[in-house]
Image (spheres, helix red, strand yellow):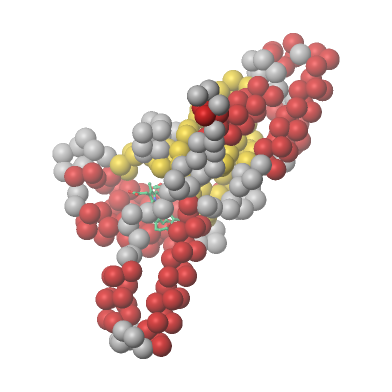
Length: 275
Ligand code: 76R
């Protein structure tokens, strides 16, 4: 019984995602005195070991503005590991040194609004391209579509986050309360139409913005975590501004606090916070 409680807890699909942000408490750090070196080493070692775990990514940030001093984003398949790794990092620098200021638990997810195969066959293959079912051209085009969709879905559910320096994180939800503005009361076809407009705006930022939408209904406050990676902070400002005019965000989106971090190597983060 107790052993089975230690077994891995893996979602049917996707990875767990933990965002955690901390203030660095200088008074607690100074109290460590001669033990500071041990804690610096423990932090560095924890980062190295977590990064070596299978299918696990750990991004470390120095946070701009005193909303927090540092933060991390962890992606990992087993909830037991997500818990172990988060707790290890939280205590690595010593008692009371990392004081949590914001945190978020979510899961990577696919999308329910992607174009289905039936629609693609009817609208694009038979409609636009005028292909006939059973011909080699039709089969080749369908195989290409399936390959594209499989890769696309994989990129969302099992993403690989690039070492781009600027990281923006904010939680969001879709409105349910306001009269005439309940996303969840809209029929599927209408939500799908709205989401395809959203995706059209989003695709204009390909190569400049990497967006990862992770789902948090039932796991945390809010409904999604939005993580944006960029090389240029003006692109973060640009996409979020442009999205505000898109009907989905303009009519239905609610946002939490925004955090902006710089992805950095662990030794540099310690140096910046003064550890
Ligand atoms: O993954 C895909 O590209 C498929 C199309 C797509 C979906 C289904 C997509 C594309 N998004 C989807 C879902 Mn998005 N997205 C946000 C925000 O600040 C704001 O106003 C909103 C925050 C941004 C900036 C953004 C960017 N998206 C979602 C969902 C889930 C909704 C649901 O299921 O009801 C949310 C909450 C959300 C929010 N989106 C894109 C982008 C970008 C840049 C793209 C294009 C990605 C690409 O093709 O490269």
